[in-house]
Figure: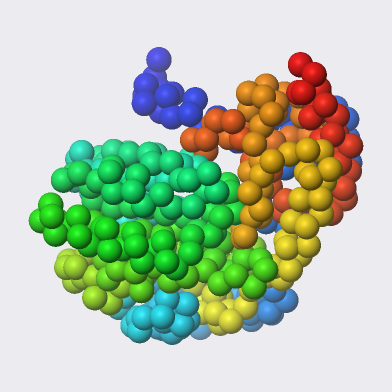
Length: 394
């Protein structure tokens, strides 16, 4: 076998979303697109803001000399300056251009961060349910993940996190609004977590970083605002992208922002800038950097997702599901009435595609993405009821 054993193992662990995608393609070819109700992929379908197209066309027409040349590995300074101004308001901390690096999406930002922080064997605490790629990003750079469960409402379990901290702990990685649960961690729990990390860092004579992956920050519901992690601890790092807030996942444009008073800031930013280059990213996409610099106040119409959440929750209520009402993102994570893989198979009999919760480190649940057309949600209503009835009678 020419393929690395580790990659074979990783492929098996990450296969659930891919399996659902492949099954969806097969079913749509067999039954027709309109007869399959696919909630498996978190692929935003709300169009980008109108201003995006205007700015893109204008900048793409720019033919001045050097417009396609190399740039600093951290990104165009004026782009980082624009982003720093916006983030200063979001994070309630004054950031400057030097506190921000542009990256190839949030995934690129997470890999740059792990490359910069981790020595072999260092531990990163991640919270279940979690985005499955986190395990791989940590492993890419010699780290080890320690998985800690959230509570029954998918909120932070501070005591469990503290119990998992050792002298090898380098970071705690959170995701809020969360994929797959839609939960948003409140300011009080983040402040408590920050105190724990600062205290345990002193205890172990080390720095424990709080890293927040925030691509869904501006997709929140019911007037809820996503709290700042930078007010919780100065050893904080925000990583995000424009994949969801501008509906640009294919453009791979994101950023890292570090707290202006973070421990060893100069060395950390130097390491991140170097990592951006040597991991092969070199720099974030140039055209998209220039575009997002002019879109700092723009966002997709998140009320579309909020309305879909309402419709979806009514359908799940009518079918008898138990779930925590999502506060943001575009997922709902109901309990499965039977084994989650078996229940997803029952849903497939109704031409409904969902992802088993074990793919996110949480067996016994299913993930449903409501970034789909309204008619897909409405069309699945009776199928959810039939699948639930089958599960109860199995």
